[in-house]
Length: 188
Image (cartoon, rainbow, N blue to C red):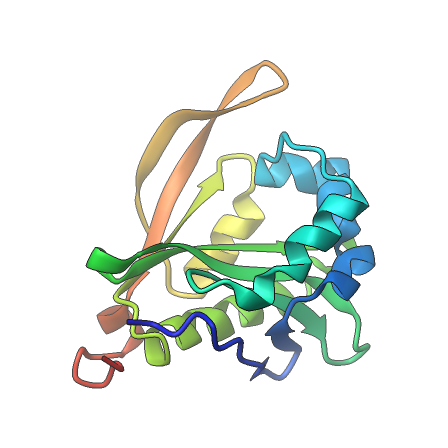
C-alpha cells in the first residue's frame, strides 16, 4: 500500500515540489480568486482564506492523498499545487490535478511539476494508473498532460455547467508501464 503519510520534496530543474502548508495560502489565493483560473478548473466554490488555511494546514496528516506546493526554483516563490488524490486502493490508482497561479503559466513549470509527481506516484507509491479530467476550454492544460505522457481515454459530454453553457471534459490517464515502471520495480 502506498505511504501517503510520507510527504516528499521532489526537485526538478525549474521547480521544487514540497509539502504544502497553511503558510502557503497567501501565494495560492489566486488559484481560488482569479476568474480565468476558476473557469479553467471549473471551480464553482468560493473559499475564504481561513477555510483554506484550515484545509492546507491539515494536508500533512492525510493518509490517502498527496498535496505538494509547486515552488519556482529561480524565485523561491510558491506558484501552485500538484495533487494525487481520490486513492483507489483495489485498483492501485489515483487522480491527479495541478493548479498554477496565472503568472506562472507558459514557462514549463506545470509540465515539470506534472512529470515529478507522476514519476513519484509510479516509482515510489507503486501506483498503476493516474488519471485526470481536463475541460474542453483548457487546451493549454491538455497539451501539458500529453507532453507528460497522459493519453486521452474519452470525453465526458456536458460534464461542467459554466455560466449557462455545457462544457465537455476529456478523461486522460497514464499507466505505470507507459512510464517505464514494471510491477517488479514498483514497491509493494
